Amino acid sequence: MAALLLLFLFLFASSALSQDSLIGVNIGTEVTDMPSPTQVVTLLKSQNINRVRLYDADRSMLLAFAHTGIQLIISVPNDQLLGISQSNATAANWVTRNVAAYYPATNITTIAVGSEVLTSLPNAAPVLVSALKYIQAALITANLDRQIKVSTPHASTIILDSFPPSQAFFNKTWDPVIVPLLEFLQSTGSPLMLNVYPYFDYVQSNGVIPLDYALFQPLQANKEAVDANTLLHYTNVFDAIVDAAYFAMSYLNFTNIPIVVTESGWPSKGDGPEHDATVENANTYNSNLIQHVINKTGTPKHPGVPVATYIYELYNEDTRPGPLSEKNWGLFHTNGTPVYTLRLAGAGAILANDTTNQTFCVAKERVDKKMLQAALDWACGPGKVDCSELMQGESCYEPDDVVAHSSYAFNAYYQKMGKASGSCDFKGVATVTTTDPSRGTCVFPGSAKSNQTLGHNTTALAPSANSTTSGCIPHHYHPHASSVNLTLLSLLLLIALVFL
Image 1 (cartoon, helix red, strand yellow):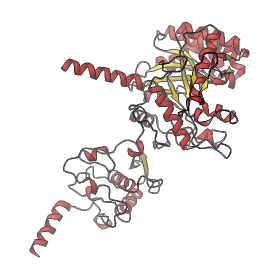
Image 2 (image 1 turned 90 degrees about the vertical axis):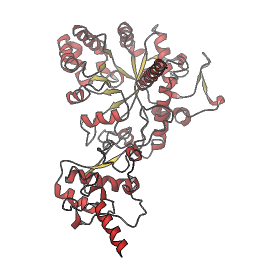
Image 3 (image 1 turned 30 degrees about the vertical axis):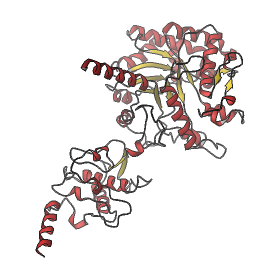
C-alpha cells in the first residue's frame, strides 16, 4: 500500500512538473520602476512559473535565478550580433562571461541569438547563422553544448500564405538564411523559435478573422476553418500559425524540428482605434492559451504534441514607445498586483493567479519613520482599523517597531477596503506585495493562514467596511507606549460589571 502511495505521488509530481514546464513568461524591463531581481524571482515562484525568457544576460538577474531551478532563455541582443558573428573569440568571451560563470547554479537552458532579426534588422540577416554557429562552438569548448541549445526567435510574418497552413512557405527572400538556419537547428537538436500574435493577425485582417477565432473561444463546427488540402479543422489562429510553420519547414524537407513559441499574448489596453485591446480580451486569450498548452492539446497537424509557449509578458512596460497597447501586454503591474485574474480552473497551479485574493499591503522599509508613525496613527484612528493585535502581549506586538506595526495596520486597512485602488499608499510609505507578511502566531488580515489559526478570532482582524466601531487605538494609547494587556483590561471590565 505504501509503495502504491509513493508511486502515485511520484506520478502526480511528475505530471505537475511536466505541465508547469510548458508555460513561461518574457520579462521586459522598459518600466519606470522595475522591481529588483529578487522581487521578480519571488513573484515567479509564487506563480509556479519555471520558464523565463530574458532579452539580455543581465548579471543581477542571472544571480537572482541561481538555485531556483527556473529554466532560463538568455539572449544576445541585436546590437551585439555583428561582433559575435565576426569573431569566434568574441562569441567565446560572451559565453564565458554570461553562461559559464553562472551555470549550473543558474539553470540556463537556451541562448536566443538576436530577436526577429530577419524582419526588424534585415541588414544583419546574412550574419545570423554565423553568430549561432560561433555561440554553439563556444558552448562545445565549454562542454555545455549538450545542456544548452542555441536558436533565434522569428516573427511569424516570415511565413507567407499561412492559411491554409498546408500551403504555407517561408518568404523566399530569406531562403539563403532560412535553409542553413534549419540545417543548424536540426543538427543541434534546437527548436525553431516563433513569435505568434493572433492579436495582430486579427487587427490586420479587417474583419476577415473573427474575434472568437483569435481568442480560442469555442466555435460551432460549421464555423471552424478547414484546410481543404488536409481536411484538418482549425479552431483558433494560434494553432493555424504554428502548423503553418511546421508545413513551411516540411516544404524545405525539415520534418523533425520542434517549435517553441517565444512570444504570445494580448494587450489589455489600447488607444482609440485599438478597440479590442481590453482587459476582458487579454484575460480570455491568455487564459485560453495557457489552458490549451498545459492540456497538451497540440495542433491539428501534431495532436498531443505540446508547444512550449512564453507569454508576453510578465510586467506592463510603461516606457515602451508606440501606441498605448505596446505598454499594456503584462500580466502584472510592477508592484506585483495582477492586471487581471486569469481564468484557469482545472489548469493546475501554473499562473493560476488568484493573487487578487493573495495580495497584502506593507510598509516600505527605507522611508521616514515619522511619516510611518503618522500613517500608523491614522490607520488605527480615523482609518478605523482594529489594531488590538498590536498591543503589548498580543500576537503581533513583536517585533516592537514602527515598520512591523505599520505593515499590520496598513494591510488591515487595505483588506477592509476590499483592496481598492489607492488603499495601499499612505502618502507613499506603503506598497503592495504578493508575499504573505504573517509571521508565527501573527496572522495578517487576508492571509490563508487565518482560517487555520485555531482559537483565534479572525473576524476581528479585518473589520467590515460597514462597521461603525473601529476598536482602534487612540494616538495617546499608541502600542509602543502602552503596557496595558487587552485581555487583562477585558477581565477587569467584566469584574467591574459584575460588582455593579
